Image (cartoon, rainbow, N blue to C red; front, side, top):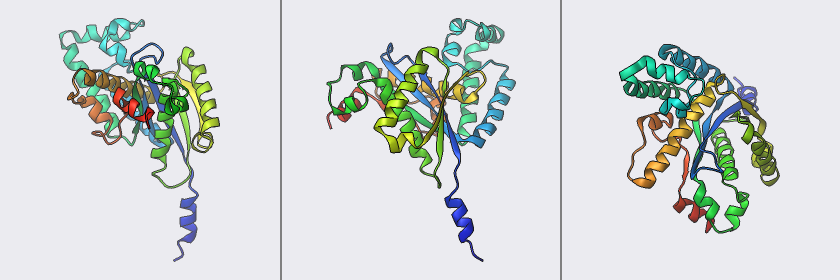
Length: 265
């Protein structure tokens, strides 16, 4: 039996990956900023969508938004405030159970976590050396490049030449920045970026569970960096561990030490 034609078809296999990403803490305003998400095959996202929406259905909750869950008064729609009122004295306990349930949906899926959390305040203060210059002297550039570079590296673990669609939570203030950053990166890294990224789009997180999942990991990663600055021995939360497959795929933490090491090479 001649398997050569089959092997050649496998070699030529091309699939599209989707990366859903979100930012926690505005890069220009916050001391710490996360830009994280999940990458997976297009068909895996369809399966994940069913699981995520089923989880929302069973808990009777609106779209997951970590800032609103931890402080329902920030939700101008009042949706999370109503959930808190409905759960009453059980709110704190149920909130953790609910978030762990969503984290387990991620854990049992074939989504791979990518991204980073950056001490952006320290980055801005670093000396103007080649590494910082290569990142456009902009922590947002570093975060965005790390996100897509990390996703492409993960994609290269499977056979075939694959393209990547990047979908970011729709924020009018940030959208133009991302387009500009992608344009700069395509010029600076044509093989890594220009030939692999097929699409950059923006979407409403209510309609796209992938963005809700990205919001969760970005929030948890940022919280972990803040906690570690206070106590370096701080362990990741169970929610973080579930979303990163017990640390197998997790955001890069650009601490002051790590940033200085990179900038002094």
